[in-house]
Amino acid sequence: MAVILLVEDDVAIRTALTRALTERGHAVTWQPNGMAGLQALIEERPDVVLLDLGLPDIDGTQVLSMMRAVSEVPVIVVTARDDDADVVKALDAGADDYVVKPFGAEHIEARIRAVLRRSASQRAEGPLVVGDLVVDPRTRSASLENRQLELSRKEFDLLFALAQRAGEVVSKRELLAEVWRQPYGGGDRTVDVHLSWLRRKLGESAAAPRYLHSTRGVGVRLAAPEAP
Image (cartoon, rainbow, N blue to C red; front, side, top):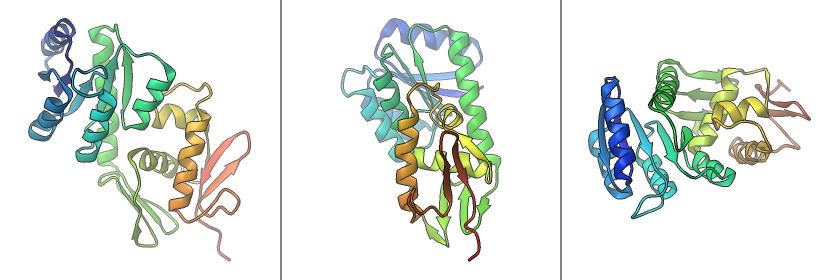
């Protein structure tokens, strides 16, 4: 059973989804707008949030950014918006998954199970060490040479995905699927931008890499710097 917070202003969708998930054994609470949803997140501490983007008081993407400022709870965006730009914007803002309406109750429950599995896996795993770089999924923190790195949610997720496979070349297709839950299709620019941000915070560049090594046309590899 999961404790689910549903932020949805459409009464028919809200009622149907609440009933379907409750029948499947989940505890569901709901809020009809973004600010009430944010308050409920802080007070109720649900296991997962289902968030509509078309809310009456504030755009759901802004609500998502505010949620990410106070919580790491998994958030699944459920919306009628199916434009690629909206999908990328929501995922970059911190969504763990993105489901386009209409959808069946079994479909959304499967997505809930998936994000909860990923969340539990990260909490259970110990720190990953690559040279002087330490990545701790339990606290969602990373440090380099004992200096704490200030990483965004997606920067941390990207670094963690690479640290799990340190020494291996990971393709952009795999990173899009694992970090952004997005099928490959021109989304390599998203990966490139986040890698660029991550390199700056690691004190390196694509021209002078220390930890992040790109293989043209293949992907990127995280490895400890070679000894001088």
